[in-house]
Figure 1 (tube, rainbow, N blue to C red):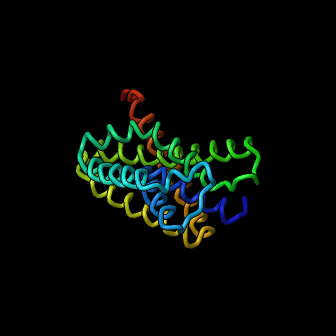
Figure 2: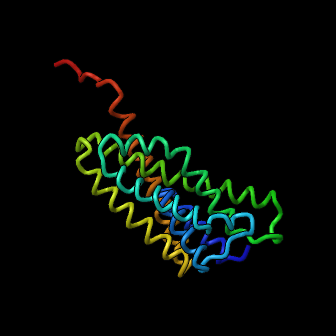
Figure 3: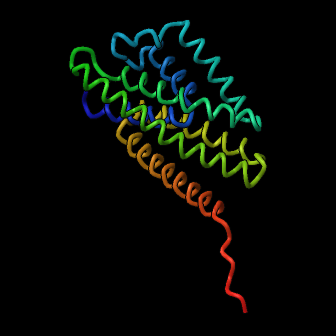
Length: 198
């Protein structure tokens, strides 16, 4: 796996952490039109059926994420779907016959963990938004995530190394947000300590 393929796979797995079906749909279209050449056992992603189904799922994902309560339910389901989608994306980037199966599985697992880490940060941000704004800010946050995911896919295809660098920054920001929100939740759960009597 050459460095550009690794960079593309990493950047795409990060985009999956934001929008799994949008990322898969754009990758499927890129494969379908010959801009992306996956490993042979992932050629099915470029089929007419896969491209249509993934495009429909991406549209449903886009719409559902703008509806309060529905968006939080979908984010809970994404704890399962995002790692799977990231593993598929990374696996499709490994050239046939050049990487041992164990290495391929390891890279797929790393992609899945990366997507899960980004998702953790996004989910924590969404939970914080729901708690502080009653969910009113969630559609705006969702739209920003849509733009970041789509831009991440485009950059991953056109400038893989730049895409990977941006992905690293985004992953770090997500983890910092997750940590900050978890600390805030933990601190708010502590009982208030009464001050000294005067």
